[in-house]
Image (tube, rainbow, N blue to C red; front, side, top):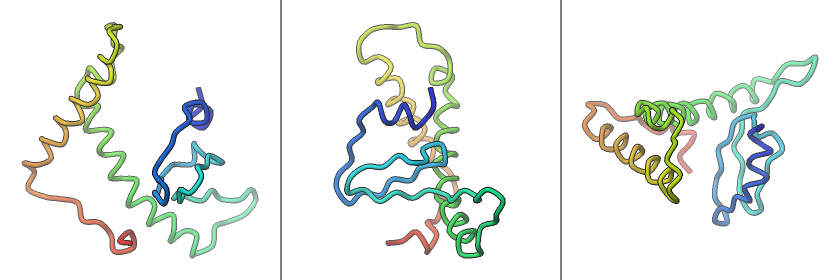
Amino acid sequence: MHDKKLADECNYSLPDDSILAQDTGFQGFELENVAIVQPLKKPRNGELSDDEMALNTIVSRLRIRVEHAIGGVKRYRIVKDKIRNWRHGFRDAVIETCCGLHDFRLQFRPWHYELPDELLI
């Protein structure tokens, strides 16, 4: 199923004045009272302006951290393999455990990501 269609069917809700960072797979997805941060697509038969490309660079700096986190959680095979246990809540417990393990692993790294100045609000 396409990302946007799945998001529309899930009826997401976020607190008012939240900021939602999403990729172009969610083009057109909106939530009330939520700011959307998303890279801009190049117009058909056109080019992005320098300001638009700079904005895409800022969004990319934020998104790479998210992509690295997803990749770190997928390090645990149970997240990316098919789970055949149908017990209620088991899949949620698996993803929560793997996210916790990934966070624990990050606490012992010698480096930390710095948040770019453009993203400080």
